[in-house]
Image (cartoon, rainbow, N blue to C red; front, side):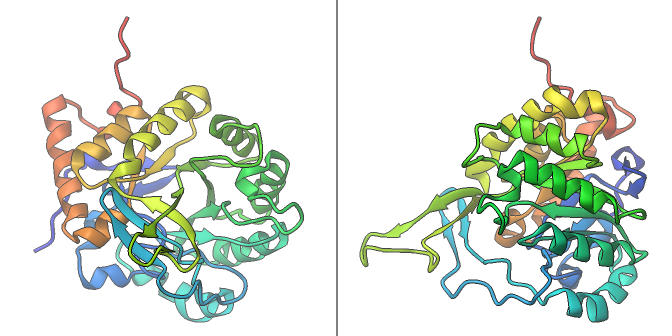
Length: 318
């Protein structure tokens, strides 16, 4: 029998009703709803599908994922079936997933993002689109999320073709190649029309096998996720919430190292309206359910009628 969260956990994310503020992060729920075969996803607020690009990508060669003491290193390389397969085979199945579906878009140019976002906007079951802006812009070489001008152009262009869906922008935790901070880039995204923010993508990292003296990932560099990055993202959520999102009424979906309900609660107190679980679901398929149940008990103990009352509720002293 599935677990039904209490009404205390229900949230409204930009007009999308969710039974709980817990979602499965991009790349960890499969292309669409494959995780429904191994866990009860009806208790989740939603799942974020794998990032889709215009052309299919096989991704980096193996090894492209490994576990570390503090979490997981990966350099998957945006492996995905491409837009054509998404439109013909995946999009038509969205309504049957059993929870909200958030589409994820990636690309090398504004035109590619716009084409994919427009296609997802045409699927009735997709209510929110996440823009993965960690991809290099072919025109500048910088990631879209590190270039304020390119980021603003991208979000504005996507907003022009997404009349049916809300647009969330997924920012990187460490901004390379620009003096802009994550708060600065969050402001650019919001000013350009973003309905919400996702904080954050993986932290750039590297591992070396001391016996072979070779990198543990074929791509050499990868992204770090898991418990080690959690405090980093808590800080970023707090800064962005206080710096722009709270006053602007822009929700934050926080992702990074959630393996216990307390991790999710920290994100909410820092300013997140919704919490994503990524590497944690690889480590233990029971974690999402434990997090949902733990948050439910936490709300009861805190004496609130809705978990939304606790968003941004960290007490900083007098």
